[in-house]
Image (cartoon, rainbow, N blue to C red; front, side, top):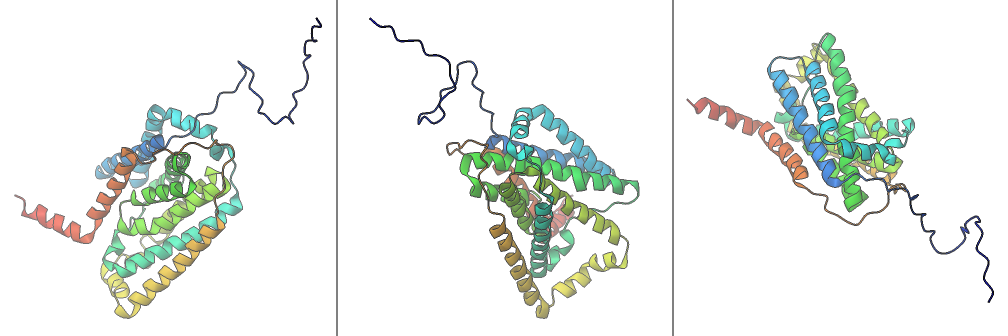
Length: 337
């Protein structure tokens, strides 16, 4: 009986139709992906810590910049203690490791800024009484530099990690790109808790979601977010104490201008049309593309209690910020013994 020769080691035939089985003991373990529930919890934790820490310090007459900087430090500590596995998964993800495209980021920022301001103009034109409810990031002296650091750079970075990095990435793995962009946009916008701010942030948040999905890099949204916040703080510092600030901060003058029936509807309609066109351009331009470094997952739930809590927190804050509700609360406090 003829014994067949033992096969000699050779280079694998990569042209074969069947998959090559991994060698036992040498197979690389799959990288853990970001889970939707972790992203929802991280966003809720960021929201609570940021508002509680800064709110308590501001109530104790701590300057705004220092208060926000303290909230950033508290959020970093909470993230390190509670969300280390999720953050490790994000650092291993291609979204973190893909460098930004500055031209793409700057172009998106210009369009998102225009659409955002058009949305705010549309809203305050129809509801002039909400013009003075838009938050103003104002500070003076050395604290202004802390405010630029915290609100202009560090807070945008943390919010992008929580909402576009963890929440949206987890939702993509659970429910797909389109739903993830919409869910992260809605949660991020509502979380700001002021009606005029919510309307104005919606176009910006959608642009942030689409630019991340289009480029495959989280850093593009970080750049855009930081530019937007830095510009807001810088413009606030520039006009602080000027005649322009006194004019814009006078509710009577703002009401006369925005409440003029001859100007209200043309101005609101023009702002809505302009903002809608710009947002449509963003939608067509920043088409999402699949990230090839993330294996497709089976459809899974993307809503959790933490996501619902983020939305409810923002909706309650927006309701309380309405002038009619504030007036009712003031009357109620006056009626109490």
